[in-house]
Length: 228
Image (cartoon, rainbow, N blue to C red; front, top):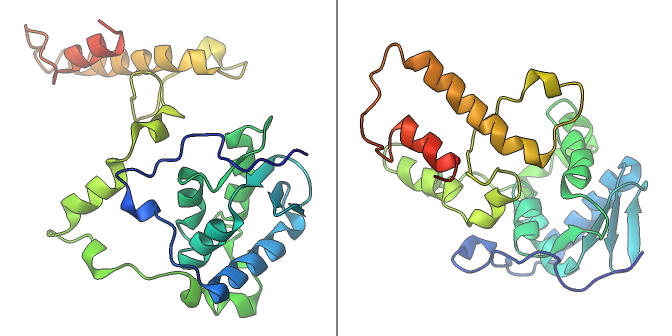
């Protein structure tokens, strides 16, 4: 196992103030470390941090900056893990696929297993490690637009990791003939075009299509997806 000190991807820090590392807190940092030790006892993945290995093998997560990583987890357990990745605090180790690495964590944090993630005494202390929703983020009429912007107006580098070149943010429709084999990334854009064609075929008898290639029309959207 070869450790690395720098992030393998470009950290997304500029223009996203919330990704700045929180103020160091020894108590929260220790609590986050204790949670990692407990969770990793039967985790089918490996966390490499400060030369130590946690977990039971499988896909490898390399923590480059343990201090900020633990501070983020201790500051907000709900978002700290993902924010630490975007900030470059950790990466999949060379040869490890990001999706393959995230799967064991997703399974551990799923709703079905959440009650068993930590022991009962630790569950009773969750409010100390998980912040409540700030009043300015409540989804009322005043905050709704700001909440939408906070969720979606992020650097495109994040979405480019899992969307097709058209950056279509909805489910694709794959060719049924390909369902016997696992689709590849090269199949994603044709599947997105197939999805849009299916929608057009459904609405065309009911909605007159515009004559001009308006960018906001579905016809214009399909042309854009095809690179025309």
